[in-house]
Length: 507
Ligand code: HEC
Ligand code: HEC
Ligand code: HEC
Ligand code: HEC
Ligand code: HEC
Ligand code: HEC
Image (cartoon, rainbow, N blue to C red; front, side, top):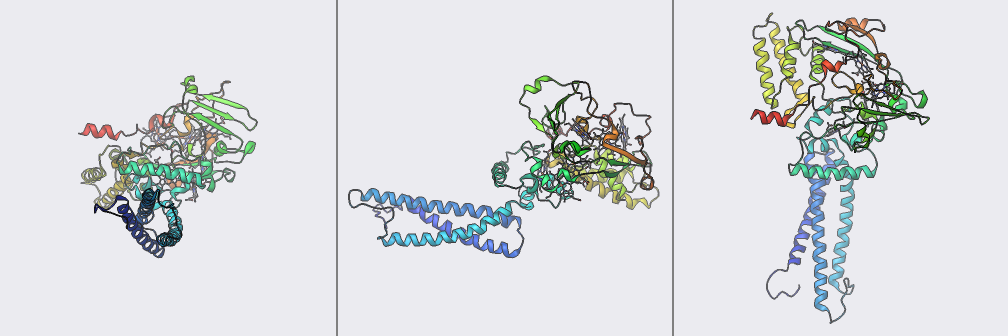
């Protein structure tokens, strides 16, 4: 024991003792938890966070304190002994030193074993979907909920958000730390920003599972609708989408944009990539063609706006967090019998309710329930009463699957670029107004992207219809749509809900 005439405990000794207590207890608890975790076969979120995130921090701090105390003590002693005999940081003739080295050696081996297992487990834990979706539970709720009902529900978050390779792993953990800090200090922004400007390029993530050469041929889709007329009139359209694919000069169809050989670049001056006034196409032979829209301002070429190379995300920007528009969800529920099309004007009434603003989910659910109950209080025939109750439940479910007012997110805040009905999507470039220097416009021909091979006011009719190239006719008779009318002129999504402003004006 060092001389201690004052009776005070020296600081470094205190640090050392606390360090040892911390280290030993963290190691013991960690070992037990890791064994438990391996045995139980599944990681629960909370044991995961404690075992693989908190314990290593305690262990690290403990060890650091021990080392600080030891070095401090040796230096102190050396100072004391100066002038006497030479002193060594390590003296193998000093039994105290030898014992200490032994203890440290045993401990290092234990620690190495523990951290090998712990490191492996923690790597997997921080890559798990539970960790990504639930640790920041509330913040990412909209992404997690929509993910679970998407075609990628079985694909782990990290497959798209991190991908393979150590560099992106480290990058993602660094930005993860920042996010955890923002979360803990409540300094994050609502909603989480979209698009993600530093998302890993799709060729390194999506293409691990889908590669462009794999695509070929057409994809058929029948899309079902109901109009808002009193009889909730059905209408279905069968599209033969020319997905295409291939590479170089053999590429064709929609996936032509991502075939090897061609390169499409664009500039969007707005943060959400809604407007694209400048597009450059580079052919396999190196020839460049620039297309610009009517309101193109040459200044944006000298600005700091990103020149983005088109990839999967420029069309499939919602492959997993799909905030479906309520019209589609209601149509689907009606086609599946969850909302009975026999209830008069149900489509119209439900859409009215879903187009309104509610500050909380609870408020929305209450309003949906009372309004529909009132509207259909005297519904005829009375056998429909049960159907109305069922419809109310479905509408609440629909609301909760695509509106997250507490998180300031709903379908209007997250555009989907894979079509041209609610957002211009393809029409950001294919509106017929994007022209090259020689006056050639990016194609606007309906049949270049899809054929309408059937449409009718009834789903069975379309299913049983032979294939016949048709012109689109509008489900609600409005006469011919004018040339150049875009679907978004009438069907475009409303401006993104501004939750901050609405909350302020409600108070
Ligand atoms: C199939 C690929 C895929 C999977 C799986 C996936 N994401 Fe995403 N996610 C994306 C893409 C693509 C975007 C960016 C869209 C953009 O930038 O326009 C995104 C965006 C986000 C955003 C930003 C907000 C937004 O909606 O744009 C968050 C947060 C997010 N993802 C969290 C998660 C979590 C948590 C999981 C797992 C539960 C997950 N993601 C799984 C592809 C995926
Ligand atoms: C780990 C593998 C994996 C990764 C990574 C992945 N996907 Fe997928 N993707 C799948 C599987 C599996 C399906 C099929 C799901 C099904 O048939 O229901 C699918 C289906 C799709 C579909 C068709 C969806 C539909 O409506 O049927 C699209 C589009 C798609 N993926 C785009 C993407 C994009 C864009 C990315 C990158 C952001 C991506 N995928 C990343 C595995 C993956
Ligand atoms: C120019 C826009 C665009 C680009 C770029 C694009 N896609 Fe697609 N993709 C579509 C459209 C449109 C469909 C038709 C189905 C639909 O609407 O979802 C489709 C269909 C698909 C399908 C379903 C095919 C099937 O037969 O079921 C997958 C998977 C897919 N894309 C993945 C990708 C991947 C991966 C990339 C990037 C390498 C990519 N797409 C790039 C527009 C695009
Ligand atoms: C950033 C601009 C941009 C966006 C967004 C875009 N395209 Fe294109 N697309 C082009 C350009 C440029 C061409 C080549 C010029 C042309 O063929 O008229 C092209 C060509 C095509 C072609 C013809 C390919 C061939 O066989 O030659 C199809 C089909 C197509 N696009 C479909 C789509 C679909 C579907 C979407 C939306 C899901 C879409 N594009 C979104 C720029 C874009
Ligand atoms: C640049 C390619 C492109 C052009 C040009 C184009 N479409 Fe489309 N269209 C699409 C894509 C992609 C979808 C989305 C398919 C999906 O939902 O998977 C779509 C969807 C549709 C739908 C189904 C809408 C719904 O949700 O019910 C109709 C109807 C349609 N298009 C009609 C037309 C008509 C009419 C024209 C010509 C005036 C046209 N399209 C031009 C690519 C295109
Ligand atoms: C001039 C305005 C206008 C234009 C342009 C327009 N529509 Fe419509 N559309 C309407 C109105 C109004 C309704 C009636 C709303 C309802 O009944 O739900 C409607 C209803 C529909 C419906 C049924 C919607 C539902 O709730 O399921 C479909 C499908 C549709 N339109 C497709 C299209 C497509 C595809 C285009 C572009 C090619 C288009 N419309 C362009 C005005 C328009």
